[in-house]
Amino acid sequence: MASTQQRLLSLLKQRGPSPIAPLAKALSMTSMGARQHLEKLETQQLVSHTDIKQGKGRPSRHWLLTGKGHQSFGDRHNELAISVIESVIAIAGTSQLDAILAHRHQLQLSDYLNKLDNIDNIETKLHKLAQLRSDEGYMARIAIQPDHWLLIEDHCPICSVAMKCQGLCKNELALFQALLAPYEVMREQHLIEGGQRCVYRISSGS
Image (cartoon, rainbow, N blue to C red; front, side, top):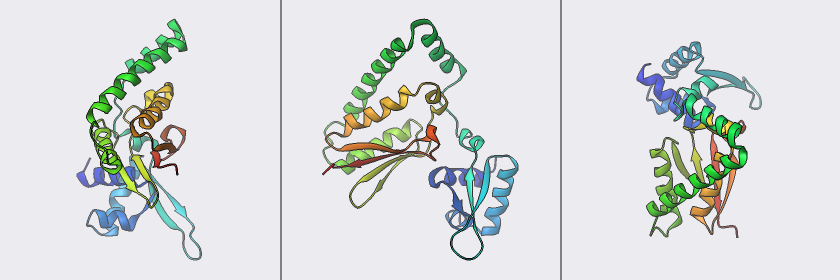
């Protein structure tokens, strides 16, 4: 795949459905050139388009990733991981799987606490957390809002496993809540529930 096409996929992964003009601008190319690349990606079923009506005039065409497009970023899993989860449930029951997930959660929490140790400033801590998550394949970033922050994960490297074992997602939310206390953490978007990405809102709660 051409590097320009890969960059287009990355932009759509980060931004969600987008008109062609800002995509072309980000790549320093003409809209016609960007359209040609998008149409090639569309023939590969990696992107699709939808026309959004915005007031009077012609609808605005927005480009977005397909399911195949999301999968092209790769998942840190294989059939064996899913098979093991299903086997644990079949042999030992869901309670044993919950115990395994709880143990994993404690190990992960301890590791993150060690890496975020001595960081008191919330924004500094959030940016460090986003860096750690990106290192693990989550394409994480922080968006600063007037009265809160957003931790945005544009990709989930364990998405297919999480769809089989949603306790992973439950523990992820609990992980962020423990790491960022006393700040409140709420999940606003969830990839496996149809969201474009996973988004967490962090606020003082006051």
